Length: 156
Image 1 (cartoon, rainbow, N blue to C red):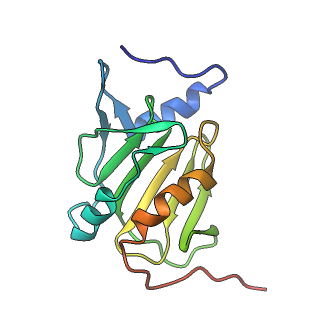
Image 2 (cartoon, helix red, strand yellow; image 1 turned 30 degrees about the vertical axis):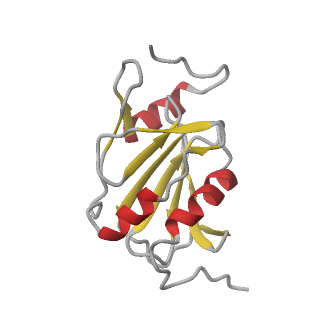
Image 3 (cartoon, one colour; image 1 turned 180 degrees about the vertical axis):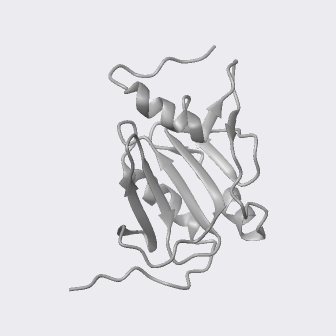
């Protein structure tokens, strides 16, 4: 049986995450998440095999695509390995547990992208349900399975 969003959750946020991880309705539903362009990269297998069983209060669920993961139902955190690595960027960069992440606030959610690693790991996050710091710390270990070749820098 599908669960209803917690009180106060914004429908737009649920819609945005559902676009990235369309949910199939049913008992123990599987999240349909589109695979990233380089999901077949062998390093993504290492990332996915080392994911935690939960992030915050949200348990790992099955997904329909290679190198993807979803936590919570409806999804509070969606992970895709194999996205294009970002180049130099004006976006805010945060280091958590030795992993650099570009943190991009979007209209209805946040996008975190590992920086300086190829393939990159993307995280879509409902920050009303799980803090970005919680997700970055929980996913740092898995992201470290991809060698870091560049670091964030701060001018000034």
